Image (cartoon, rainbow, N blue to C red):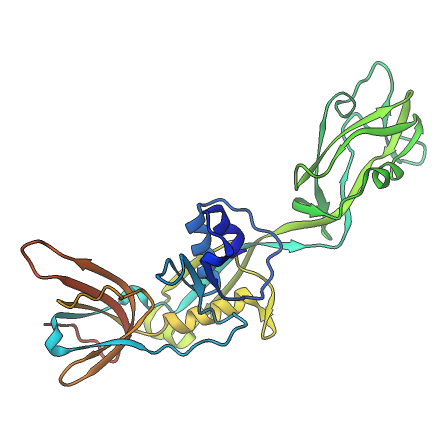
Length: 343
């Protein structure tokens, strides 16, 4: 999926360093630009996404990947004599004790009837079976033009659910074998199930007046399980601090099983574990030209009385003609106290 989306941005296989995440998603409708879609996948699978020096696109370091996760080593250490500005602030917006996920989950169903003709007028015979007269002077829409047979299924509760994608659809001969009629004969003069993925385009023809009892198409549908949700809280933290929730929506979550539970549930557990940690954001400025700095790298700050480790989440490089070069790094560090420091 990553490769196919990246190809829309002009990237080929050799341009991509991509981990293997063996999770299946039945259907995704791409609505955003290339970077927005790749970012959504990276969020759903906790991947590091960047345009790196080694490859135009890197998509790696997911806890769901089949390759062993490489141990992150410290990229570089900054000492106190190399730093002219250091500020630690509480990253209060990072702390959350409740994660609320809602997703419209695509679900693949067994092969079944995905369309049946039911346009009025409808009549009923002596056995209360519905039928559809195709008799002069009545001319039905399905006879005179390319009629759109929109796919849908009926669930166990009797509710009609739209189909967002279908495959293994009846061939022309299979669909004509399903025609049931009195009089006729009936047949399809146009039968297109390839142009659209959620509907067929058909034209039905009768040789003479008759009554149509059934015209249907079978296929294997995918429907959306609307507003599937999973909420998780840390009860002790909620009791101590009140509910502080983060709301999440993403079209790339899957119900593929990870350690016995759906991937989206596993993701929520990982998200909560991370968000209940109290963290500080540390801003460091140095005159060293750290051109090789990159988001996601581990750094270490060696002060006289403490050592701070963290992961870069933002950086900038600034140079003016009449001033010294400035590298600004921002990274998150697990909070050990509530102090705010600045030097």
